[in-house]
Length: 437
Image 1 (cartoon, one colour):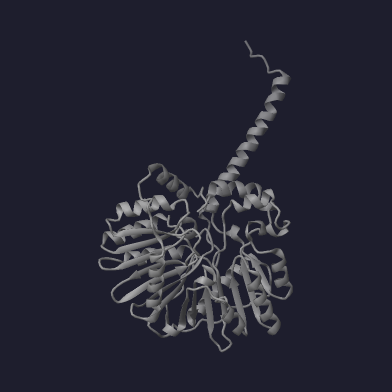
Image 2 (image 1 turned 45 degrees about the vertical axis):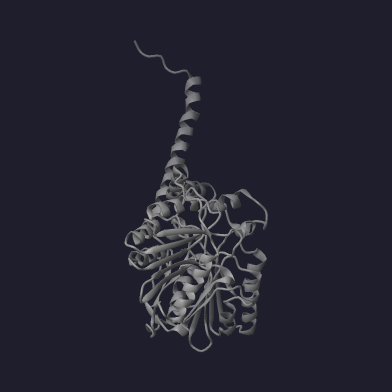
């Protein structure tokens, strides 16, 4: 007996349901495609940089640790005659004025500014400041952070699907909270390189890396400073269509001196940290200063250094969420050789710093990157300098004294009891990117 045909009413009711299922599956497929592609896509030019190793003399480097009346980058800007390359976020009014003054004094000088496109509502640079710089002839490149991989692919896939194509922080009213601005902020991408490179007016080059502001800055001169420019200009090239971008200076020789130095960015910073810790053993001293230490590879390397007999001191921020479970893990598994202290909440943040002191030399990694997966796995724009110098040099003693002062002023961490719930919350948040760190 033939089956009865469905009524026209039933057929009509199933058509919208089928259409909804098709739309849902299409969106799901698009979301999954964005998740997987943006988790593993090729990195853009100018990222994950590892320069050649240059030789510097002690006169080629300066460390500044005390609050200064004059910002550390000011002399570099004021002496430039040919080119100034700035990667800074946010751009303070004082820095903008210094660039404007130099441009007016030297109209033919090439000035390139790379900056985070973050909304002014969330601490980004004021639109009026960037507009004034552009009107003066300075090239302003809002870093195209969406070219980077996603640290939080579950959320970022959604953001790219529904918001990226119509979300531009520079088309929004300043200081006004909008849905696109809120969604972009939670996408958690940042340009944090915080450096200035300029010629010195006499054929040389100077670079200033100041991740902690004027209270802590590293100035390097010579071939290493010159090498920092190429990657910055590549980032500017894929972040703006301005055809006035200059060519970088030609490469120079390796240099002479007693200090080995490399410029490293993004994920290369993590590799340098792990290599430095892997070289630490019995009788060595390790100092770590960062707001947050949560990257699993760095934690494993620190525990490995303690396991070989190195003494490890870890200085963390007082109020960062993952620090208590990390402190508990380090002290519990460190065999009595790892001590954790926390910086007072109101104290000025130090640079992100790793010191490995051997009997004859000191290894230093100075960078803008907190020791987290988001900052060390090629998700943000970060910059650092690796130095290896004689332990008795003036530069080495200056760094060792700085860390000792910061350490003596910090509080012994009392939250070292293992808390399984806090530990696994941190591990899941770190692994998935569903976190604020």
